[in-house]
Amino acid sequence: MTLRILLGALAITLLTTSCQDNKSKTSNPKPSMGAYTECKDPRPQACTREFRPVCSNVDTGVRCVTTPCPSTTKKTSSNACTACADPKVYGYWANACPE
Image 1 (tube, rainbow, N blue to C red):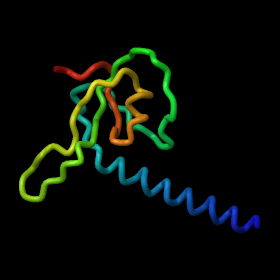
Image 2 (cartoon, rainbow, N blue to C red):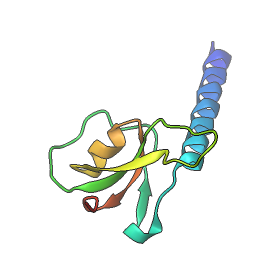
Image 3 (cartoon, rainbow, N blue to C red):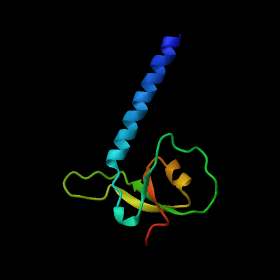
């Protein structure tokens, strides 16, 4: 029984680590907007309603084969917790997105 629990925990750890590595490779932050904070797993399940806007780096789901196109877009979120609760968000910059 104890061996099963240990093996299960090891498998979950390995799967979680490999998923985190993939997310960090696909993000494309722009340094001109200041410090970039990457969202970490596990993602928040509940957030406060404070208003401290951040500029989220959101995956668009678009993958081009022949021409370059943006795979991410910027979206203003009400706070960092709300931004990282969205599984499509790679990370964020402090303050709202420029218009």
